[in-house]
Amino acid sequence: MGGIAYYNGELFDRNEARIPLSDRAIFFGDAVYDMMIGEGGNIHQADEHIARLLFSANTIGIKHRYSAEDIYDLLELVVKSSSLNSYRIYIQLSRDSASREHSYLSSRGTNLLITAEEYRIVRDIEEIKLISTEDRRYRFCNVKTVNLLPAVLASAEAERAGCDEAVFIRDGFITECAHSNISILLGDTVYTHPLSDVILPGITRRHLLLGALSSGFKCREERFGIGELFRADEVIVTSTTKLLRRATHVDGAAVGGRNLSA
Ligand code: PLP
Image 1: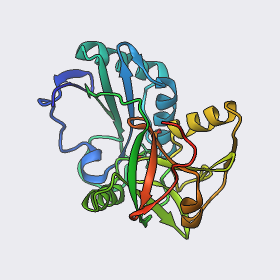
Image 2: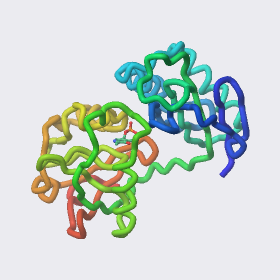
Image 3: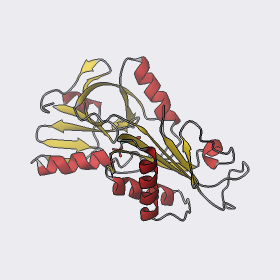
Image 4: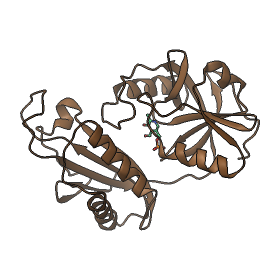
């Protein structure tokens, strides 16, 4: 896997980059990140992803010196240096480099990691299968931190079951998927979980809602359960890297397939 990496001012071949053990992302997952895709010089929705990265950092008190413009310039530098035409970019801001102490009050500086690798953007609406599983994450889901263990375990559980994504259920309601948001179309209305600390404010979710509204659908940010998922005309799974996907099965039973034209 080729590509390029930037770490604290230096550029590397992606396979050659080294991160010091003292980076708090390693011992504590004390870091926030974001993921973007792009083509040529166009980093898709870069301003929204940068704003979310800064929101994530701010929400958990990571103090840093980067403005949105600084980050955009660095993303541009990485993309240009990579010479990639179709790519995905990962950006991670960790709190500090220090010896392994939980509290961070003596933190002095942040670490910024950016990687770009080749990525083929698929615009066709893919059909996918889901499993449902308990949402075992804690309540910082609106912050994009690198603490992804429950999502990692659920994704493996989905793959083991021959599925593509895991849909999380918390207190009887569907929150989101392991690495996507989920919405349903019921009649002329798109339903999706309201923004809160139990879902990521997905950028593709936002664009789905904007697109649905401008196409004459109603949108309701309301919680729904597994029953509604099975009654839905369409089950729509959204994320930056996979764009919009349609779920055809949940736990082996057919869902949706009654409205979206592929
Ligand atoms: N929810 C979770 C938990 C995610 O990890 C992601 C993407 O990484 C999403 C939703 C989708 O968000 P976006 O559309 O901004 O990629």
